[in-house]
Each structure stands twice: as C-alpha cells, then as structure tokens.
Length: 174
Figure 1 (spheres, helix red, strand yellow):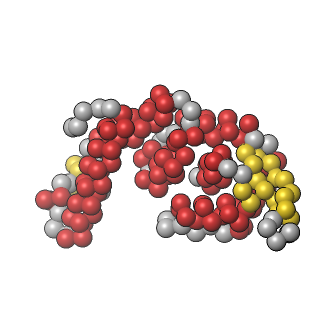
Figure 2 (figure 1 turned 30 degrees about the vertical axis):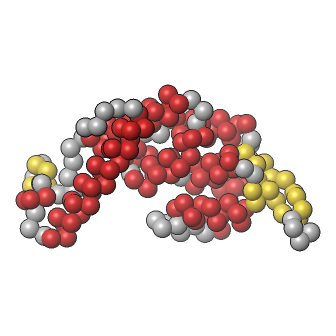
C-alpha cells in the first residue's frame, strides 16, 4: 500500500518527501503510522526501479530539496496495480480505501468500474464475524451487546457502501 500511495500522490503532482509524507499520513494515519524508516527506503527503491525520479529544485528559502516525480513506467505500474486490485485489496476496508483514493488515476472508466464491481460482489456475499461451528450467527443470536454493536455498525457501513457503489455503477438500488 505504501508503494501505491507514493505513486498515487506523485501521479497527481510532483512533490518533495516531506509533503508526500504528510499526505500519506493524512490518508492512512488513522490506521497506521508512517516512519521515515519506511518511507525513504521505499522512495529509494522506487527510484532504483525507475518508477520515480528525484530532481534537485530550489525551495522558497533558497534551500534545495529533492522533488519526486512519477515516471511513465511508474504511471504504468500504478495503473496496473489499480486495475488488478483483488483479494485483500478488495476485502480489507483500509486497503480498499487506498485503492479508491487513487482510482481516478486509472484512465479507463470500464476498468475503474470493474474494480468497483469486485468490491460490490464482496459486500453482497453473506458473512458474519461470529459462528456456531460453520454456521454464521445473526445479530439477534448474539448475547454480547458489544458484538451486536459490531454487527449493527458493519451492516450500516455495508448498506451505505453498497448504495454508493450501485450509484457509481449506474445499477438500480437493491
């Protein structure tokens, strides 16, 4: 996900590492922290792979900084990563929100819709957090008020997200 966020933000505009770090923290900071020990080695790796470039530019105070820019290869990589999102990129809400944050970078509307359809199919499949053997338990079958709360919150989020996805895909309401 870090690679996706780096390339996604750089696809929007070139920026220096500090600004990129702030944007990544803004997008994912609520769910995980970002250390310089993660970001800067990732930038170095992406640079060595030819997915981004570093250029020295003058700053407002006259101090030169390294500006990061996505390359054509980086853009192709980003598009492929978005287009091919599946598995936990679709089923994990934090990962999917990262995909969603940059989905507009994918130029083909049909490819964007395919990703949204994958998420909708996942959300429409019956599931539960709790089981009696192999049988999923319904909210009404749970004695624990907090577990029922989890189910209530998950159902509300699921319904809201499915409605938005159906609207984006031009599908009738369920």
